[in-house]
Amino acid sequence: MYNFNFYNPTHIVFGKDRLHELDSLIPQDNKVLVLYGGGSVKKFGTLSKIKAALGDREVLEFGGIESNPQFDTVMKAVDLVKKENVDFLLAVGGGSVIDGTKFVAMASKYEGNNIEDLLYSGFAPAPITDALPLGTVVTIPATGSEMNPCAVISYNQGKHLTMSPLIYPKFSFLDPEITFTLPTTQIANGVVDAFIHTIEQYVTFPVDARIQDRTAEGILQTLVEIGKETIDNPTNYDTRANLVWSATMALNGLIGVGVPQDWTAHMIGHELTVLFGIDHGKTLAILQPSIWKLRKDKKSKKLLQYAERVWHINEGSEEEKIQLAIEKTKEFFESLGVKTHLSDYNISKDKIDEIINHLEKHGLTALSETQDLTLDIVRQILEDAM
Image 1 (cartoon, one colour):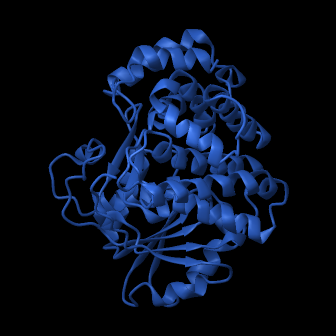
Image 2: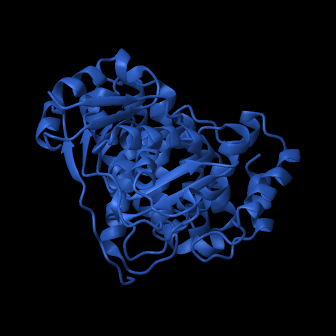
């Protein structure tokens, strides 16, 4: 196991009917900006409950944060924060709203000359020394952004990762009942997103990190058990609660400490979203089986472990076990209603060059946990995913 530091200060408030507890978690004299996406938080009463819980505090609103939050949009929120001297940010939504709010928290306190520098830090901490405090109320279980220090912002035909320990949410409310009204496709995307978040940190190569492995396997098994059930029975509290907590645990840092991490599916998937508008979760379902098919030699030991421990495949040769695990993973995604081929989204082979060019433009030419996945291999992956 590699050396690591582990730090996660986010206070989780889990369970039904707990929004009234917001009052105790935000200072009474704070001016609060509530940020959200579309109109669902108003339509289903979530926003009104939040405003009631905030009591006599001055509360401002900023709506319209997109899926894949756009730089220009969140900068409008930054302008509002500065104009109104906002003290606290409250994100109400899924990963996109939370990511956008994290960027607002950073940009509102940024003292550098070029705000775009916050978008190009990648896996290094962003160049900030302060950020506005923020909290979240999660309405879409998927990204785990409610308990990590990362954000992805869309800018200049690219999706850019930024991170800082200063943008961990102070608290996050996870109420499974708030997610009951979500469209089926959003829940399916969320299951896939949480699944692949776990895979990216687990199916790499062994470093004898047993706690991380067993925890990752527990998340994956849980998602397999409840994925289709929580789609078919959206108001089943227990299955939805397990999805919500799985999504948070998949990317709160716990299973990623001390182990190699991949993120190939995410890097390529971001380009598919930018270029063709395919939902993030769907891009991951398209890519992951083909990545494994082309990288079996690099990942054989962990793929075999995945086959045996997650899918309980105990018969056949090592090669047969691995192949069956890949097939079962693909079948799982399909059982959620998520298609797993580029052609299902009207993406043809003549688009591959465009995808490759975008990866090269963004410097993504040496991917994977071993950084030897070249653009030539990406091409093979995309061809296989057709």
